[in-house]
Image (cartoon, rainbow, N blue to C red):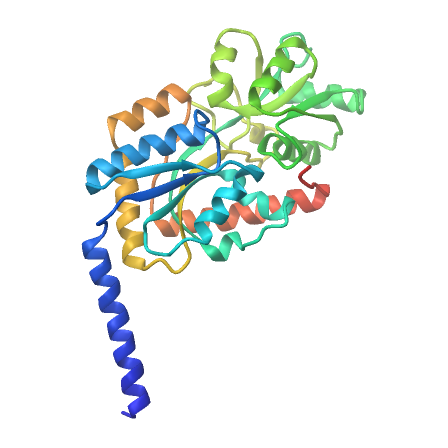
Length: 320
């Protein structure tokens, strides 16, 4: 073995030893969880609940920091730029797989963030104003075909999940509707109940209570499977196979974080998701706890990035 080869081998050995030692002593100081949405938002609620369970298990404080802006991009960039030592986590919504195609990002989402674990999934629901004539996807499509451009639908803005869900439906059904943008879900739902817009996609988290109260009508589930919360509402995929507009949340780390730390944090997140507190919160908010391995979450990320790149490119969508 040459001198250079011995140096390289020694360097590799020291790197592995250092990574293992870091994993064994981790954590020895507070951890930060960065969330790109305001306090009280669904991403914040679940992030804080997971952080609380994890800090009880790890024996170190997990400080939640809300860095709001650019649909989660400000928070994601802060984590990308942080040290890859396991002390800065990102709790993100699925908008993270949309942003690369509607914004000019200062980082590469796929290459510079490590998916640790998917935490929850949440179905989008196709909903209608109580006075709108349609009661199903078939009714909506038939009306749209007979009245092109006369149906108004709402979203949180260009490039948002509800916008892309409707763009997907327009594409598969061969119809065109008018897009009306609102600041967020509360404004969208208020407009829908008042009849200012006819239809929209929004999450079960936001819509379940209004549906149960009869203030809005559910036409279809956006995800590929029926929702346990709305068992009588069929998925869009029943009419258009392959349709899937489920949302989700997940935990990420900056690239180059040692594999042992990724594994440790994956285990901690999955254990947190098993807690009665998280199960109760999920039931109350109409979401499904997922969990799973880092590899599984990475595969989901790749599929989602590919799906939304196609939707956004086909419809020439840009964030306003």
